Amino acid sequence: MKLSKWLQIAGIFFVALILFAIRAHSFSTNLQFDSDFGRDSLFALRILDGNLTLLGPAASVGGFYLGPLLYYFIAAIYLVFGFNPIAISISYVLMGVMVVVLGAWIQKKYISTHAAILFALLAATSVPLVTASQSATNQPMMPLVTVLFLAVYMAGLKKNSLLFDALTGIVFGLFLHIHFSAFLIFIPLVPLFFWQATGDFKRKFLHLSMFALGIFFMASPVILFDIRHDFITTRSLLGYAQATISGSTLSDARPHLSMLEKASLIGELLTPVLSLTILSFMLGFAGGLRNKKLLAAKYVQTLIVLSLGSLALAFLYKGYLFAYYLLIPTTVWLLLFASLLAQLRPRFLGILLATIISLLSFSRLTYNDKFRTVKNLSQITAVIEQDIENTQPGSFTIFKDSSDQMTGLGYEYRFLLARDGYMPHSEYEYEGADVLYYIREEGNADPLISTHWETTQFGATQAELIAEPQVHRNGIAIYRMTR
Image (cartoon, rainbow, N blue to C red; front, side, top):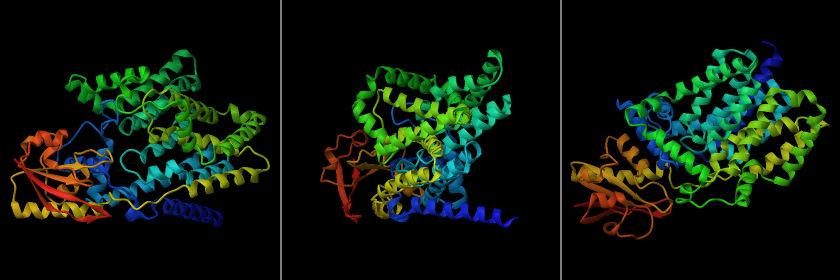
């Protein structure tokens, strides 16, 4: 192998190390093991115990379910590395690294090496991308599947193969197992796909049909579940779609954002300094106008339609807009922005602008000392485990009283207990447990007068404070409640 090839490989490896360091900084105290992470881990543990599932995570709104591949992926990691959530967190950080590497490869293939460098600079410290790789559940996967889909989609357009269309649909179908916000790019993607496919109307329709067949294949687990359960998920999804159009039902849980609030949120996600980014975008677009081949290229057209189309739909969306709903459009936007910056002349001007934006983004990255880490929560579950050993209840369940709006089901505690061999009673049948361990993470609420669904279903008449450990500056009160 030539020396230049070795140097290229060494350079990629060095960049990957920097990307990993940015995302894994303060690893032990910064990566949070929250309730969603605990839920996914608990369901993965159940899969390894032989309880297979056709459903994945429930959507944050709408009451419908996604596909189950996320749970099976986590189960595979636990099978190989043991039930250590840190292994999952490392895999998520590595996904964040892969987003930058694969995105840069796409840029190099379809634009230039210069565009690849610009994307790497922007994505390396992008606040939403770095935050996603430090998160759990679906967030780290959303940007990765986005760049993977774009790579397969562009290869499929070049091959002009019906089988490759089906493969493209299968890759897009991964979104159905991760997060429903992929609809933001799916809606502009359908007419774009039809337009970019080769052949007459009949041939284009055949291409689109094969693409849809691939998506249908990936949705088959949920479809199979729906057929067996009176299409409960489909009806929930259709109800959510109707509520999205009208905006009425979705406002019950959280208020709608005004257009100004949406603009502020989107601006914060896309760039650390909006005025500089707008100026850079306009200069890059002007440079692109001089390069007729660039704007005629299907890759650039795809980035323009998917990024601007999805952001426009985000403005039209009539529900509450969580920041991570925009991870997919943000990833496509960064690819487009880097492609346009690469058109600036002289070239160092694009590098300079990307470097300034990257450094400003880096200054906004936070590595806070989190309460919800495996180490901290294990101190709480150790108290419960000791009490179980001392009192030997027939069955027990868990309730978590928290003001951060994390689920009271306490999945993070449930997983840690189940991992250690203390299997809680079903989280949906509180009345069937003999003991309820009430974890009050803050405040001084009396557990006996709690009006939460879980505690009222259990119906306790006695509550005994068994411990009050000091965990991460928090006084955690742990009660054993009985009838």
